[in-house]
Length: 108
Image (tube, rainbow, N blue to C red; front, side, top):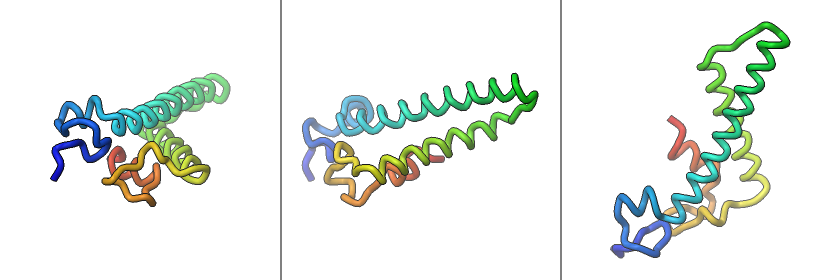
């Protein structure tokens, strides 16, 4: 087994490299973080406007479910429009989708 990172094949695989400096991990996390931030901002702003104009409110667990749904919908759209070549590596199947990565690594 090669000592190089199985994701980017550039440096020795260490915990620090895998989670903090691997280009593959950084790109994946960057995409998910951007989507998460956008979804949270949208849900908070929408909840604020709903409370202001309709005098109704939703619970935090309900808002979290909406955030998860928004992320899944966006990832599904990315899967339909193009395959994620920057996320491909020897350890990821060519048929792996953004949704599979989300459910396999981020969804709890």
